[in-house]
Image 1 (tube, rainbow, N blue to C red):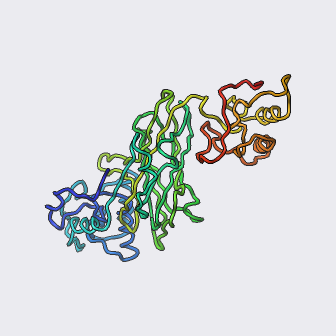
Image 2 (tube, rainbow, N blue to C red):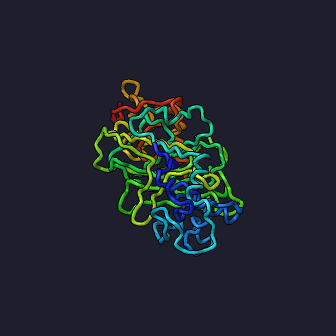
Image 3 (cartoon, rainbow, N blue to C red):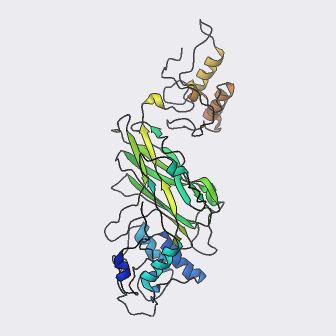
Length: 401
């Protein structure tokens, strides 16, 4: 467990006017909430206890250039922030900005109001930690939309796997950063996409995806609803999809292996700070819990593509014709036997294979109608909702039964 506001004794020993440049809210980190703290000061007149910390370019004035420079340093990995940046210190430049309470005063105020409780549920820990708020209704959750004890099934070499990330909140969130890590080295992150429905018709004003060029096992996305008045915030949400993580499995991943996806900060590099998982509310970090997921590498017998009724790993005209043939033709024994994978033939995922499935698949193939339900177009497992009816997917692939 990481508690970012439990400050080291050296902070208490520092002179009151010592600060970290760019750490506008005094929590000891450089994150999205610092950017919002500066924006709230500039647009809404909300006081920052150390103006020198908010003066990111050290020009003696607070202006819109300051949050822009901070955004560039944290998320774009460019530019230079003047000292004191790497360590606490006084302002080397004489100016009229106030830092009477300094870092220590700001930190003490924030420590009373909140404590960042970032808890990444590690592989093998009890799944209840991720789906039980312990009766604390105001505690925010960010989690993959499945229990940790139910792994995501995938094939070696499979790409474009899409897993939703859900948010539960009491509301009032102005921005969020999600940073993912695959420590086993056998997963390749390919992108993160925002779910537009959560943010209303306008959508978020600013979205940035950071993907290190030399490390496909890390990726981060930062979302800000707005950067100027009137500042928009998220409403109360209960396990609503915030974003979708897209990834692939390495060819060398052995069948049976269990691979982790964690919420883990992108490390600092050179003179740039880490990209931290964070929820920002009113320019301050918010208490939350983030819960990872597990990917199980399986054989082809364990997953299917919906619509691929004949199990040849493509969806084409042979599949609706095969469904119709199974439904209405009769072999010498009066039946052509079971489907090779009834779940794959259940195109509309209603728990029954009938003529509507063949019709829906023909409509998709030739009229541009709605595509088959998930998993499609990539192989995967059936719906995540356990109470839905599920059909068998047999290992046999002989269409004659």
